[in-house]
Image 1 (cartoon, rainbow, N blue to C red):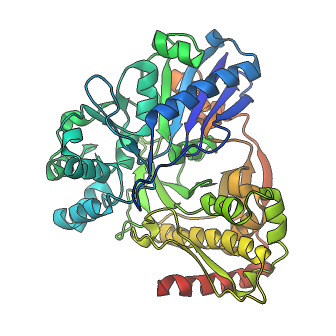
Image 2: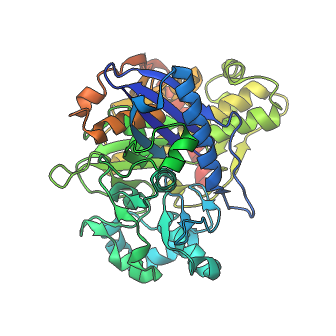
Length: 493
């Protein structure tokens, strides 16, 4: 008996099979082998074709079954994790009306900011815990204003994970947690935010049916099952945005616990039992996957768009793929802490929430042509990403999220010793790395949603720490000095 998890990212679709009884991940794959294209028809735009998500999910599903030698009828439930804040719109025949406007697209910022001002900051923050900013609601408002012919055909809007599930089941449903990440949720009324729908002129019927995060949410249609290589009738029992799901993957469900990721974008995600917000909406509060009315759980999210994408840009564009990431990490260690005065602002992947939706672009500062080489550039880039993390973490602490230990999967930027040492030494927090990922977490979530696991403790019995990085307090002063230089440059931009 197995559970199958999908993780729909912006670079690939991952699939993982978890043995229900042992809790072990038996196989993982991802498609495509090269990163999925992100289309940018104009500066600040970022779009993807939802059908590509589906095609890669089908390839991943068949491949993971073959890799594990698991029969389709042995898969008893499916879970889905997905890139947050995206927008998919379909007509009544379930035809996708335009490419998905994904998380790092900046075009809708003026719409969210105008709503924030017109509705009133205090009222909006009290009810939404966020500015509408660049979230899904603002993206739908952009479509309404700029593509009225398309908007007139919209039957439902969906988040990326809602779309993937609908392709599987034929049912268009969503979750309260998902609506909260799109700035559609009224935390005071505990329902979709009618005042925001009225402001933008959205018909409430555009919202999909709301289902619990952990619950049967539909069953595989025969046609979809054939494409996926699975059995018709297999239930989808869990879905969540990638960052709440990453927290679930790391068993971060209670107040005071912290999860982090550092893929294309980077996130620090803390759990609280208080519905707090940042007055400037630089960090954002959503319903966590473990939230209930009796035991409220809120996820406070800090995002840096320009994270692993900066590292990959250096490899692909500057180094022309001449070396791999391990070799890059080794080169970076040849430069001292602070990269001998070379400083990087990593913000080159759209509007940054921690900068109040400013889009500064990425930049290097203090370049000395007679002193700096590739090691300095690579180190400055990785340090710059960590410094942006720390800047956001300080905002999180201002709204009551404590930081003692950071949990993360041993993947992406956390594979870099320099990256994780810099983060531990700057924050003073130990980092616990786990051999898990979003697809594995989604599979465990499927087991919880099916009711096979009665508690999270059962679902995560097989989750173990594979590495712990303790901060070196002797090195903290050097990192703090480098951070202060970085901060001074940021404040001048």
